[in-house]
Length: 255
Ligand code: MF3
Ligand code: CO
Ligand code: CO
Image 1 (tube, protein in one colour):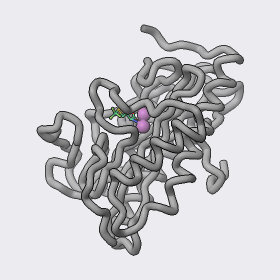
Image 2: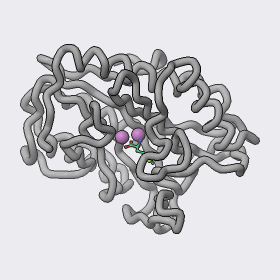
Image 3: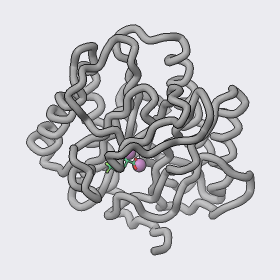
Image 4: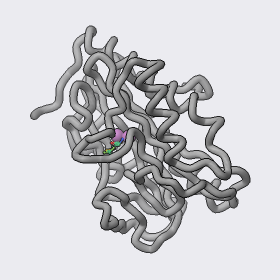
């Protein structure tokens, strides 16, 4: 399948799906505290999406994924499965929310510090957030995917961090994962030029240690091979006439 350009009607649906996904993160934020289990966070998000939003949690049963959200703690890079282990003071956790509303997907994730966290943890959360924004600020018609990947990789590596290569951002719409693949590393001037009406995610996974990852036996949980800390932030974005619209913007964010 090639890269789709969304129609005005589709863009309206993407705006709604994106807003709902962002609102789940806003809803769950005050519950991310020492002692809460990621199962409890999953349950709260599930009920909110299904009952309040009348939407569908996209991860549930996606290629067999067993829960409604992903929760990735400390050295877990992505696709962490909520479980009954309580979060503890000093943990960092990525909560990744994808909802389907009226057939369209909105996908966004955010890092949370659990109680007081170390300076090292704050630093990797900050750098991965900066990487996301280095990517977003380049988005406009004519920018190439490689420009985005380069900017993210350059920022991370300048600060002696590394970029996970095995997972990437993606086109999004009726499909959870559509074309194109949005790599978080690359060469300036390479790759496909962006066009107005494309919708895709940027979701850099940035490690403190080496870039290499390992898939656990549950076939979902991805960890850093060297068990060092990792962090990720994700937005779903739309390419507009002259720039970008962040479809999963939260009210605490200003663009
Ligand atoms: N939300 C993830 C992404 O950003 C995908 C999760 S797939 C799942 O693309 F099955 F693990 F939920
Ligand atoms: Co995504
Ligand atoms: Co996601």
